[in-house]
Amino acid sequence: MRRARVRTILMSSLRFRGSLFSVKAPAPALAGALALAALVAAAAGARAAAPTGAAHAQRLAATSAEASTNWAGYAVTSPDPASPIDFSSVTGTWTQTTATCGATDGNAASASWVGLGGYALSSQAVEQIGTDADCTPSGKGSYYAWYELVPAPPVNLTMKIRPGDVITGSVNVSGTTIVVQLINRTRHVRFTKKAPMLQPDTTSAEWIAEAPSSCTGFSCNPLPLANFGSVTFSRIATIGNGHPGTLLDPAWSAVPLQLVPDGTGFGFYPGPRHGHGYAVMSSTAGTSAPDAVSSDGRSFTLSWLSDPSSSTADQ
Image: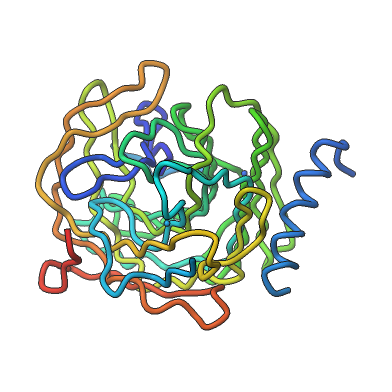
């Protein structure tokens, strides 16, 4: 992901794989992008202030999950690396989680988001929108929405987010134009942003729960994963090479991801001087592997674990 806990801290949303970083009445163009998102759903089946303190035919989901040190959930990508799929749209819905925070959890954070790009080890970009459930130094939960077009820094939204709110996020890409949208269905408000991006990554689509990273200079440190309980992504849909489908579509491969902290690694960091830097994981908290995808390919659930090493995914 991601977002800034304070303005001087950047969050990178590219993923770590093992100890390596694998690496939101419209105008016509905007109306077209939003219509595309609606087409996805039909064809498939029907950050506020941050805490004070301190960013793949039918192949069914693999029987065991791929380990990541900051991502959990599902990614879809081409089954043939030599023939990448161009994913132009992604959407999903989740219920805002509750952060369970203790006296020592003031640095913990968790994010739920949908996005395009960032899955490949060589990726240097990701387009995403989502919400956070973080812990404040006083041990309380903090909730907010954000979008990020890595390598640019994240942008927090003024949209009110509370535990239990039903959230729908979507990302649409047309050339170098990005449209991100977040709808709080509980509060009947929405945010839409159209922005240019020089080199968007459209080789994958994702539905992710994440441990955000705090990045400064050449150091990227994934924050402890806040106890979010569990999260279910539903109404999942994407478009690849102009073809609308779900997680179980035979046109692409679905990869389950389990968040398993793994010491230190060499990772990506965002911003105008984006590149690679040293990353240190400071917590054992992670997630279960995502459960089996629903029969219609449109939903799955995963849960927070204090130490997932006993159920670690295959590396």
